[in-house]
Image (cartoon, each protein chain N blue to C red):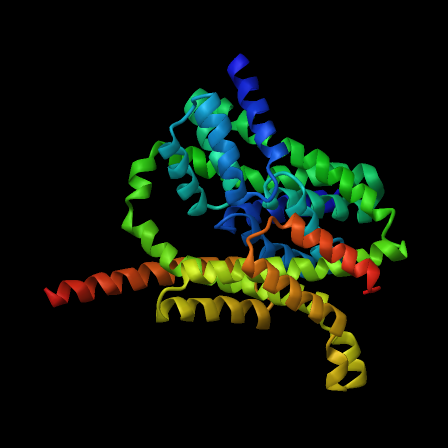
Length: 184
Length: 196
């Protein structure tokens, strides 16, 4: 039981003190989990991160689940996961409730208009980074175009794109392997 | 109560299909906002800004924020808090289940060519999805689509103040890698000073 609460509070600390999510959380996880608690080696954390990127959901949550599971089984996974989301829940609920009272205020409206521009900058920069990491060849460009076009011109769910992309990726990989096999 | 069921269903789906962390949930949130009256598309940019400038994983922050606002518009603060909690838990539940399965077969998963191949298609497609969300964010911040449709004059499409600020922030962000908060705060100040 002590270990479960230790997992909860350690991950609550990680969730409560890292701004920005994703890779911004990595140094904090390394500090708390690798150096202080010695729950995992640096290499294991990097592995969990890699798997977190290739499984559904939020990467920080995936990492918490992994470490919790490794330390204390299914309950460990649940406590670590609840720990990492608890600070978010309280902070965001406060802010969401607070901001609703000020939406009619003129200065707040101007500030939010400015902030919207900053958000556009951040999201477009993120897309450029994802493009650099993920779009490597003509097949990648086609998949990008399909994902973009379906999202802009239809009201289909993004799930359609995700499923289609997984099937296409597997088929493309098979085709490449076969071609390489023929070459031998 | 209908809102809660719909939120749980939609965020569970989002948690299950949004691969690649944080911003990958964004296209799903736009999709939800386009189908339900209780989630207003106009809160999206505020939501992203708040999620990026407060502690915690961005995907979790966005789920809490969406849930709260959906619940609030359906039945006030009490339902808002409950709805925020429901959306957040629904988002992380698929992760929890997936990781518990993957943790048992970690080595096989990491060396699987099937998983590797799936990602050759998935990574660029998810990038395309987020690019479409980025386009929505950009047009709501820097373009006056409604004004353009009403007047038909091409010049009225562009919000000049916003575009100048966009170019400036984009250049700074490209030059020095700053934490999002240091892009968001100056933009808020500029918004107040220049009455955007």
